[in-house]
Image (cartoon, rainbow, N blue to C red; front, side, top):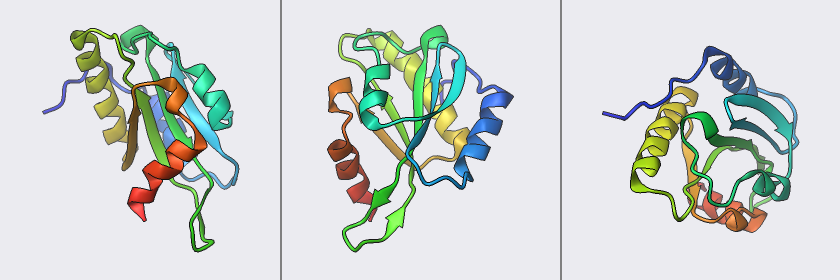
Length: 138
């Protein structure tokens, strides 16, 4: 059983579906922030700057990232994994983290995401960090 704090709006469900099957080969993200969802052509550096350092991300201030990343494997193959990246900032109260986790789990279920990564510090969100996370899925 999963705690559901926020339901995923139908408009976001549709965006996620279209995003999953997009044809572009650039790095891009769906950033869900402050109940507004947008698709951005964005680098990891710019994405890192979008994450507040110590702001809890629950109900009205949620920030979730679904990131399509152009990943070049060691053997030269290229893939475009869809990654769910979330930050659980240090200093958040346990209740806030539980609410955030419940909302996150619902979004992951609906979007059928399998590459789910957490960072405790927005500064860790680098290309090297993401490549290390993705290396597990070879």
